[in-house]
Image (cartoon, rainbow, N blue to C red):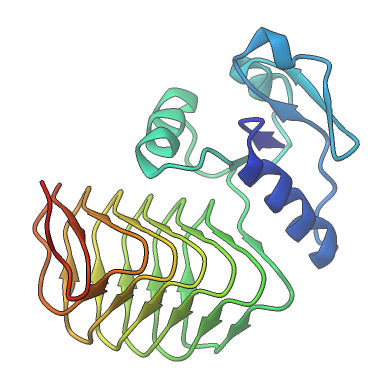
Length: 201
């Protein structure tokens, strides 16, 4: 079951179908205007509480931003029912780990000894190199590239085609702008952009 009738839900549905691992039984969203709508042939069944009517179904939260995914996870109050979705085109070694509820879309590359937390989203063609550590609810947009031993904090958001130098840390709740080149540590909750990236707020 997919939570949030979003663009990410459509992308996740495509990844699920490509992998052939799960059957999606429905989508839930709190917007009553979406109820009954078909998204990729899958019906929006109702609000988030409908999840509890399907106790055997695994769940993927498809809200685009990490703070929203975290809020939904807290509201649902579940620890063991989250599915992990990995598109079959993802290149990943056995030394990498992926937390429950995370979504890895087409073309991502994970080289060696990479740790991905819970409810992380990697959009298409993200490249993670050795020893990267991605905390819960982080979002890495299309084309993001991380050098080795980079830490990405909880709820951080890295914009499209941004890149981070090896051994740098992106703080919890930080935002990195599209195309930014990060050469030093970014503190919690700050927004950085540019080449090289500098603090905006």
